[in-house]
Image 1 (spheres, rainbow, N blue to C red):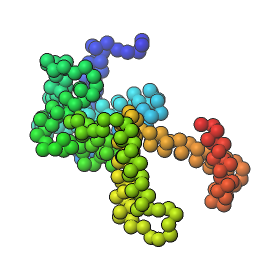
Image 2 (image 1 turned 90 degrees about the vertical axis):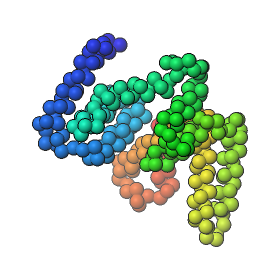
Image 3 (image 1 turned 45 degrees about the vertical axis):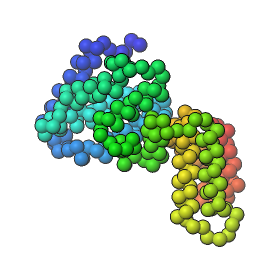
Image 4 (image 1 turned 180 degrees about the horizontal axis):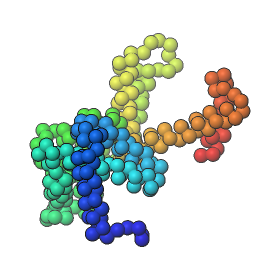
Length: 267
């Protein structure tokens, strides 16, 4: 691609960013005011914006959002240097050293001929480095529950705790579905034990996430794509109803279904 730059140009661009960051931190009232704590929620927001761009397959937006995240990394490093904790060089060297340690099949004499073995070695080395008593100790507590479930399962798999065949995983899904149905019988009139039903529903979700992981489907991505599909179809329904002079709140479900099916036909 003709728009790709040389290594020298890449280094010059990064040097330019560092210079601008120095200038902003010294001269801009907003930039001077920021702390690691005040940037935290903005970083999370930027990460979700990058996620949206990736799902949309929009390369120009991906470039833009990656730039925003790079700014945040440089910003944190600048604050770290002011506080005497770390700077962009020590941060980068630390990352390089970690990558070398965790790729002994490239920089050492360990054998790893497939991605699964690489992942297992990574988790074992990470466990030794962090001194965690549990393999699951490195899973961030604040992760969204669906992503956390996936990471828990991946880490357990990294030390060999996993099903051998996909039919075994699906049988577990069916087992959890039956247990949930026993706690929440939709046809029954009596009041359910919500606490038990919630626990069984959680088990069911966990097993479905596990099955998705086992067959190489990212459940978070799959759910988000469904969210986006629903939003697109519902907004079509809203617009179609408005163009027909109708108010959604006054329409019957059968009337709304007509527009919904039209939306489905459009993808």
